[in-house]
Image (tube, rainbow, N blue to C red; front, side, top):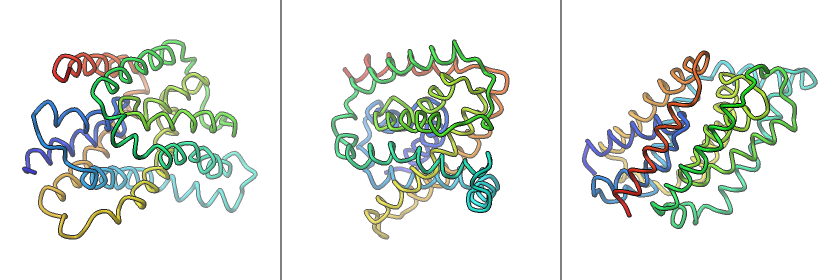
Length: 258
């Protein structure tokens, strides 16, 4: 792998993991666009470790408070967050465990990725269009957290987007766009940690070379900036630009890969 390829894939992972455009779709189809050999699951794991670093760095204060409140005052609104996140993580973890082989093979077919981008763009548009944009996370209930967690399990499909699905579900439930994104990022943390711990043993030390390091650092930096950007963007803007991008990407996949 060249350093340019590593840089491009790191940027795509950092953007796609947190913006609602699907990092897995980009990692699957962009190598096809440029006639690159598939970078391999090990490299994808390294890229996800980069975005794990970015989300931990961005939300470390939040997580310390959430964990403290979860054990010290579990009956309060703030104390509920830890347990809501843990329970809401289960559907995504089960989907990843039972559908891992399909996610690495069948689900990565270009035509399926394009169809997924188009179909879920429609759902995201509906959620964004009808968004009441009123409720904050202080109103979150266990049932609502579980619904958002179920939506996160759809991210096993390249083209769905983990952040896209969870933000979509939160918007359907009436939460503000910025709060929807914030809970989406917090909810993604345990899933990314779990996936990284499962896949990390597959990486051997002799695979960690210059391109691996470049991809890791790039995905971490771009991921951090993507989180900051989206939380600020959704204070006043809608998801419409991302929907247009998703549809354009689907069209490009159909033209180039089929």
